[in-house]
Every structure is written in C-alpha cells, then in structure tokens.
Amino acid sequence: MKPEPNHTNHEYAILFQQGDEQALSFFYQEFHAALSLYAFRWVENRAIAEEIASDAFIKTWKMHWKLDNYYAIRAYLYKTVLRDSQRARRQEQKKAALSRDTLLCSNVNADTPIDQLLRAETYRIIHKALEELSPGARRVLTMHFIEGKTTSEIATELKLSPSTIKTQKAKGLESLRKKLLRHSMILFSLLANGFFPFL
Image (cartoon, rainbow, N blue to C red; front, side, top):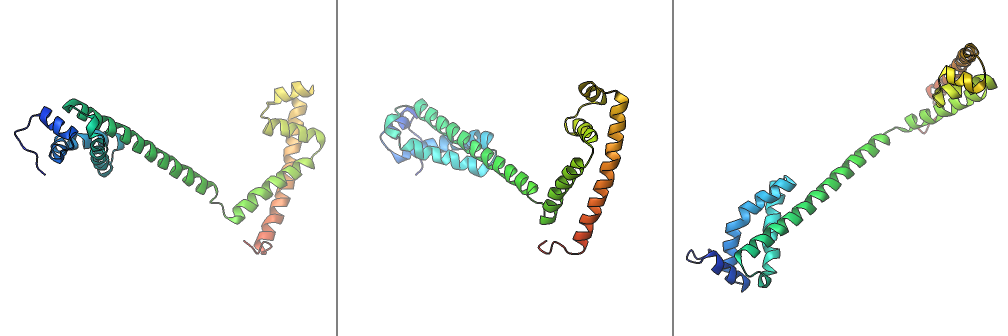
C-alpha cells in the first residue's frame, strides 16, 4: 500500500502508533534503504543486510503502540538494526573461527596411518638410543638438546671443563647417530617388506 503524500511525518507517526499499515509502508520507504546500508557496514553482505533491515520493520511494527512520534520510530528501527547486525557479525565470526579451527584440526589430523606410525616409532627410537648411551653422554645431550643449555652452562652445572663437555657431546652424538642409523634401516626394511599390512 502506497502512503498518502499529504500526511506529515508526525501524522504518519500517529497512524503508525495506531496500527495503520499505510503508515508502516511510509516508514518502510523512508528508511529501508538507509537501514540496509547501515547493516551492510556491519555484516558486509548485501542480502543479509537487507534481511536485517526488513526484519527491523517487523519487530518495530510489533511495538507500534509504544512508539508515538517520528523520531522514536526512527530510533527504534536503527537500534534494532544495530543490535541484529552486531549479533549477525558475531555469529559469522564464530563460524569463521570454527572453520579455521576445523581446518587446522583437519591439517593436524591429516597424517596417514604410516605418518603417525613413523612419528611414534621415531620418538621411541630416539628415547631408546639415548637410554643406551653412557650416563655422562646421555646427561650432556639431554641438557644440551632438550633443556637447551649451552656448553658453558652444562660445564658449570656438572662442575666439568668445557672441553670435557664438548668431548662427551661429540662422542654421544656419534654413538647416537650409529644407533639411529641402525634403527632407521630396520624400520625401512620392515616397511618395504610389508610388515605393516594394515597400512
């Protein structure tokens, strides 16, 4: 229904309060485009913005008997659009965050069974190889590579000379290299010969 052109804004507001649909049509034509633009600045989606603006008229119409002037109706419309736009934006942000988390989880869990097996077996082999080193070499390598301490820090803590620490580290690394090489060759042989038929 097209509004009558001879009514003033104040008269339309009175008619709106009384539940006159012609007055509703007037306010729709008066504000819908502006409200859609206002919503768009929040949600950045034209279809959603227009839907929020349209819904604002429905919600405002339900409260028509409380709104007795042009400015009160306008304020209620903008307040409704602002609230609904902010809610829609939060929902979109949550969806985006959930999508990112899902993508990250899918990337983390994208390992094949063989990837997971090799990672677990590598950890086990390194731990076992460290356990087979002499106590001194094991302690030095653990302090250096796991605890992140420097040669001088290790020497001070163990009350040994830096040269002794360097010697133990070099011997430990050489022994560890040989042990890891042996274990990796065994693992490769098992994989090559189909030892893991479930993969």
